[in-house]
Length: 87
Image (cartoon, rainbow, N blue to C red; front, side, top):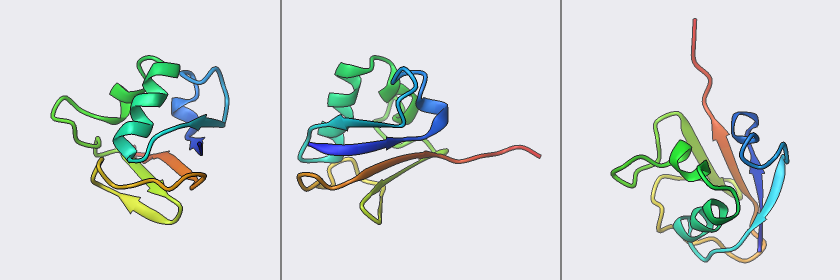
């Protein structure tokens, strides 16, 4: 089980929780577990072509992840971040 740190724009899905637990041996499995627990959340991060949306950054420990098949070790922290934009 990994601790997943949730960016504030995504916390509506987690009922305001900043950190939640999720299971998975890859980023894709972990996001699928989050989707089961918090329906609709995955679509905000992953597009129809199964790619990470441009404004989303996913870190496993200190490594930025761009491939959903990247492994996640048990108890490795995951950070879901949203880029800010505007002017």
